Length: 246
Ligand code: HPA
Image (cartoon, rainbow, N blue to C red; front, side, top):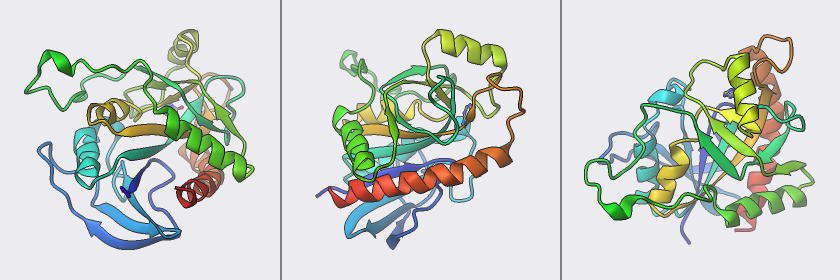
């Protein structure tokens, strides 16, 4: 069976309980991935873990080599990717600490390499992206959460912003008007690149903070880390359940 891949984000740079079999350096036609691929066994199932910001969180969202990351996973036979993402909550039910499985994306990023086919393009490479996240993996995440009695929100639009700065209050107002429920910096082009290589991809998002301007508070990294450490415990519970039932 092909290994499941987990791409970890802020707050998830390692997976405890993962028995590491190999740290595999993979080179790709698009350069180096964010870190060697952590190949391991999680509850007796083969899993590949990749921290998208690097093992010490030194790669900012706009500098991540998304193409190398996705290509390296494909190269290792991965067919399914679960992307874990820390996000800011915009919609009123998405308070800090809440987990969600978004179903749509709006891409506000710029200047990122968006395609594997930029240098050898052809008409058939305008690939359908109507439904950006894989239905099946979304359901697997939701089901695993239910089994673990972890509450999780089904749906919502993920706004992918450029970062590395957080947004202004006016930007968040605009995103809310656009219908976005949550905001993060790494959802694109990651999701689309997975689609280009025919890999099933879905996101498990953790609200790290209220998005800018929704409270009077200044958003601090300390507060984000604190909220995330709780949320990530739940994410790990969900992942363990999902992997077990693979
Ligand atoms: N905005 C963008 N990305 C984020 C946020 C946010 O408020 N919180 C965590 N990642």
